[in-house]
Length: 252
Image 1 (tube, rainbow, N blue to C red):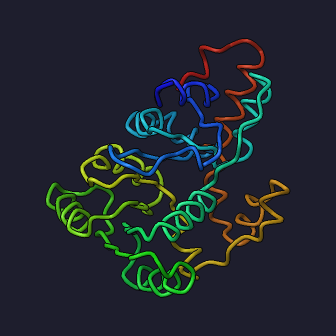
Image 2: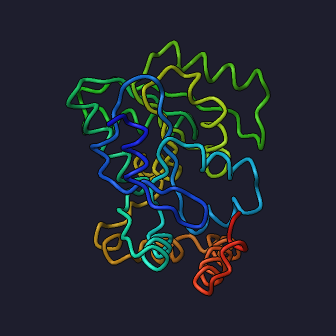
Image 3: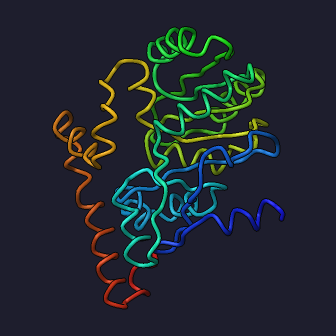
């Protein structure tokens, strides 16, 4: 069976998005480039008002479940549990695979100081990986020259995997537009993982992920996350309407 048909079998459609429902082991790390994006109630709500972000999520080769509560859509609407593959899981999984293979990983995003911390820690945790990075300008939109500078840095490094950490929706839009121009095998948007791994923010203990309460820990530590709640509310509104049979209202 070809990969496209296999992928179709291993996704669950939720409110217009085909969410990957398999182990990360099933994702091959070989060319042509494949793009990974994540979906959560927050990203769903933002995408409902941002067509470019919506396209970036829908057109990703693998749209993995980042926010556990988005998985309620699969359970309540389709009777299917969706495997959680959040940003930290994606990061650790592919770093471990690249370490075993002696691969090359490139980090695009954040500050030079954060990238230096990532290099330092990864040298200890994953000594067989060659790590590169580039800190793009902090701008709401990149110029063509900015994008070309990023691509030049990536292609000259020749990575197997590119992790993009520029916050949503900028990172997913960048990956959709430019990911396949990097000539890497895999491009994955993982956002806040850069700061967690670099030590800028405390990592959330595994027990909170298991209890589906990581969102609460993050909100307590960073109250500004409360600003996301209107976007999150859009997901729960659309899920409720879908359960009532108003499926057309929840197509973003």
